[in-house]
Image (cartoon, rainbow, N blue to C red):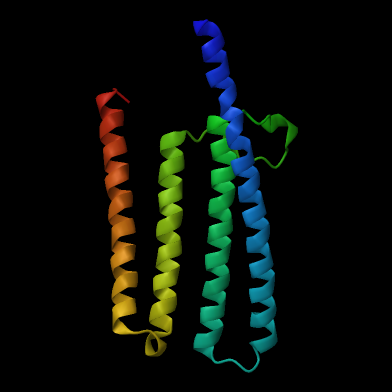
Length: 166
């Protein structure tokens, strides 16, 4: 009975598969926004000033970082929690992808969030005349929280690794 229960628990990991499919749908939605932003950027680049061009580029960088974050979650999450993907079948498979564990996934996620937050903050600073002081304080505060969270998470993971003898 215990063995059957454990088999059922182990098989329940497949319940996560639709979550990863939903993230793929989200990635497709993000692609639509990238195409839309690229079109808007390209059709207005000639008449735009330098700061507007930089803001447009930062917007594209922000969308790209978000897409990369989604890919990290999809592949690493699937590999860590659902099933291994046979990397030898994919000649372009990133080397790090098969080696990332849950701790590495957390740190990569938080690093990506910090990078996205930094881009948002830079966009706010580039458009400072159209951003209120209160809004700017929120951007700075949230960015600092993300940075501090990342540092604390990395530090606690290092401490737990040192305690295990790594």
